Image 1 (cartoon, rainbow, N blue to C red):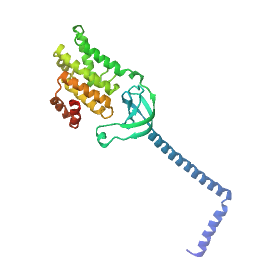
Image 2 (tube, rainbow, N blue to C red):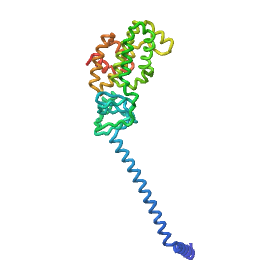
Image 3 (spheres, one colour):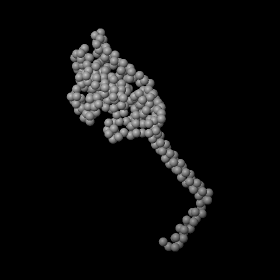
Image 4 (spheres, rainbow, N blue to C red):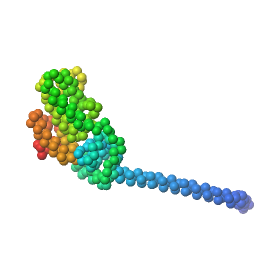
Length: 292
């Protein structure tokens, strides 16, 4: 490239910059600065939003009540984590709650295997959406089971008892309803009580309406035979889980099982036959069977 050509290019560049007004430069610099400020504000807002969300998740538990006792509730959050939270308030199962967390006590590795919920120290539980229709679920369903057992021996109520027996079994094993409630609407304590009554109902229907279970099994397509084993298995599973976080209900369930053993001839061989559905429960089930 010769010198004259370089001079011409250099002159053109000088003429270009001479043509730019100072005010235009200021405008360009101001515009760039504005974009830089807006970008900083946006990134700062996003960062604060993420931090606030993290702090809220660390400080509060939002979830649904899945179980309850006299002095606690079990809450499951959106990630299916379970928490045992102190509460003497009678919160219906299925209600949404918000709990301020002071401390979370993580279960041990052994407890995690047994699906033990995390224990939470909380300064307060707020019910954000009470499931009012579940308020009396435990009491009403237990009353229905007790009434059904009592009516089993009344010859004049034979047809009604037949219908009630189907309702009871469907409620326990086929997602049926009683008084508008499902099995999941009950606390574990109530479930244990109705399973104990259900054993008595199953035993009585054999005595007072022999062959009825076989008849409805063949006509409905649902299994109503072999209920004794299914009821016992459900009782053992619920007791095993509740013994991980509710010592009082656990002790009562084990005591009740000793009565059930005598009344319904439950043997260890029967329990061992049930273990095929979950061999890891053998140790826990033996403790329940032996009353330890």
